[in-house]
Length: 294
Image (cartoon, rainbow, N blue to C red):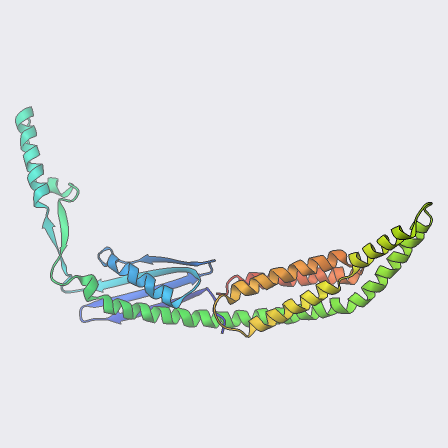
């Protein structure tokens, strides 16, 4: 079963006084690239979230969003930073004494001082207390994501499979034209012999060199053999699950493109050149689709 790199999943877990939600989105990427966002007091979840995603996925840009809604006991309270407050008051008195300026302080003056008030945890750390819920929500989201990526992967396999079948037909036509291509090669050789025979001083060795060059230049037998081998490899990958199918498929598509270009350049048959253009267009479509396969 093929796996697309595009998908979405959502999970939710409920506790007595908390709800944890998880949203996971992924798109295609050369490697596995994970981005995690969660509330500030639950940042300690991030390494475990990344680990869970790495266990489930191999490639793709993955965005994970964790949300926590609490009511009742929040697990945190506000405290005054006593050291900062004492230092501020002491410095204020010193300035007042040295400058003689009136220095009337109000509570609102303290609100604008950075780090004057801090949040502290009461009792059990909420990140640890609610991790099981987060793991459950994340698991549900990842499961849904995997299901959507499998569904999309199967759709991609059907589309690519039809394109590969059409490409195979084109390769068969190119192979059928290769016989005619040899006839055209011989005709060109004969034309070249006639031209060379009119040159004074032309020896037999030169004629043999020209013959060998033209036959090798126009023969596409090896390219046909490699194209058939690549088509067999593509067909095998279509029915093969597992990791890195997309990368291996993309490699064979590139090799097929290269052999078609070589066959087209070497061929003396106009039909082969036309077929090569058609095949290259199909290959580009396949490459666009395969970029999204894991």
